[in-house]
Length: 107
Length: 426
Image 1 (cartoon, helix red, strand yellow):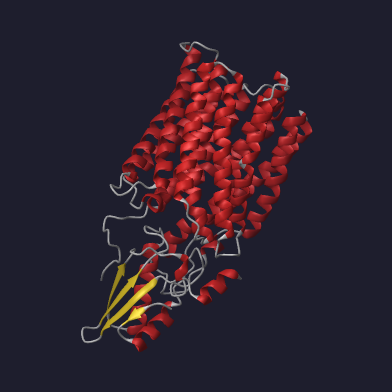
Image 2: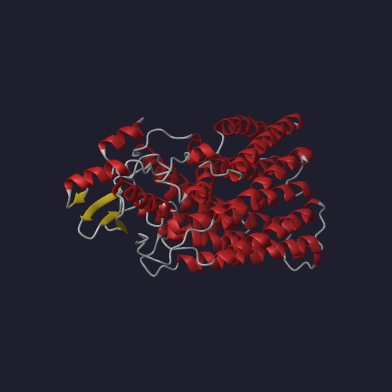
């Protein structure tokens, strides 16, 4: 999946939840699309840091996707502060799409 | 909570700015097809007649330009990597064009170059100027030169030249100041619009959006710069050839534009071959059809320039050339791209704060695939029949073609209205 995290178990839970967030144009979830880059959990301070990207910078769906990621994580982990950071360096390329994602797009 | 966007100033262009352009263009397309039916007989005459002039301007301005203005206000941030400079200016460009286009078309239809045509032309010119300012201001990123933004800004520049020259031609009817007959200037006005505006813009936007929609890794900026140079160079050479007064001087710019078309078709073919998304939806297929259709007008132009063609058949080929560009190439890309963009604009407006909370419908579900299929089934035979009618000078073919195109326009309008009136279901 190529996602960096400081907490394997929480990251697995988070990624499973984030599979609900679909890119509306492609119909593929943000995890298999390779948009999620890093998930860090600061448990003492109840904070989650998400580093993600978009298929293109200034994607018209960008705010919708980052908002959905926040809402899904909030629902999954309860009373925590979610910080979503967009990172475009390096830019997203189709190489980041997972094998499952590729089979979905090949259908 | 962080909003996730490193550049706080970035804002999507609101749907309220963009959607009126789509609705106006849809109505323009319907009006145009009705005019085709009412004036079918005009397509057996020389192309310089009131009905053909009126239809050409509804198609070029009311349909093609209006929808492209709206779509480019929406897509500009994707291409130039910054927000649109002014939403207010975009809205004013709509209002001015929306009032100016019917006045101008009325002037042509009645062949009255008095105040309606003049005011129509003035309002359209001001609208285009506002668009040009907005695009240039939004494209100045201060970063490295973006090829797609260059295509877009240059296309806007050519649109301004086209509108300015068009207004000058309208004034020339009242106060003749141009040394040659007005017919001699029409190719300059028409090609500044068709190649400088439509072709450059569609190349610039298509080269960015088609790989995005197909999820292709293919990228070839060098080829895009060559295409940019060939189209602009070809167009400048065409303007220059006007002063050479040599019929064959048109061959050089035609070859330059032809090479650009082939290079672009090759670019799209490579994008297609390297795509990850194998399943291609209906709107995308119709858009890709337009890439193949680009080469047909070039064949018409070459036949029209051939030495063995009589002047009567030459005028027929010119009429067919214009029809194929406006109703074939341009219309097919718009029919397809409308439903690749409008449902997402409306979806984003309805569900941007609901995604991830509740299950939302798929944006594609906002349009009707059945209406789209029937629209395509009316459009293709309508286009072929009307083209055959121009070539064979057969009124029955022209009328049946126009009838099928009215069907396509009605179905297109119904689908656009269905998407526009969508209410959030969750």
